[in-house]
Length: 323
Image 1 (cartoon, rainbow, N blue to C red):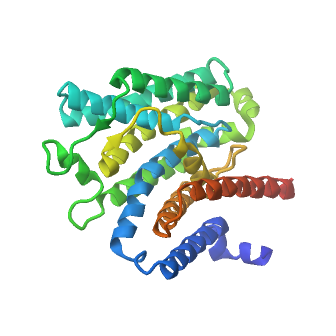
Image 2 (image 1 turned 90 degrees about the horizontal axis):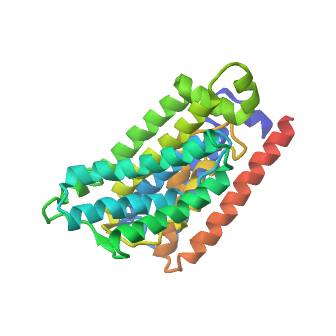
């Protein structure tokens, strides 16, 4: 196994990413054999719809976990952004374009709030994210008066926003998601900001002693996360249109599982955007496969929990061997 990992092609592609691609292909094959209708285009498009918003959540939390932090508020913040912007659209007549921008701004503001408390006030990330999760749920419920918000259908005025996921037979959402993933990969691996974010997860004290403003770069990771969560809200409503207050936290574990499975270390200092993308597709395919087999969604939650434990254990074991 070690010789295989050291092979030049395997090292360049990444052993973990190759394994994930194999798991993805095997899952698709097994689900297709179990349900002959699974291999059809409708199931694939349905899985992609789920992957888009979950993918943006996973991309965002990858930056936070890379610093050694965590954010359990991403799901509720996504719903909060979708509810507030959707309520402004349907109840106050705010134009569609402004409503979409408002969704991103709500997510960004939560990122600023979380980042400031973690970086400048030294509040533990776990506490901040738990507080933000409750604030997001409460704020959305108060703003919408606990009403469900339904965004316009494709045929309704303003329904053009749904073209963000599919335009005819073109999977526009996939193109946009992969473009954002490529941008995130450049930021994380090719820019000073990304290098500092990764270094914070490896050894924050050493970075601070070298004269780097660690608070600024740590806060930036949360702001990036919040911005991507706001974008995730747009893709959620583009796929499902209806949003209910008080929900969203069920997507936290799935988003975190996607990035941890893809090679991002929960201890910080190591992250893979390409791995996160593949991990998200695995989670989305798992969700669609379980539904196709007629099983309850609870099974997916059990499997996702097991995946998180296995991925974290593998990361801990790898670090032990390295040390």
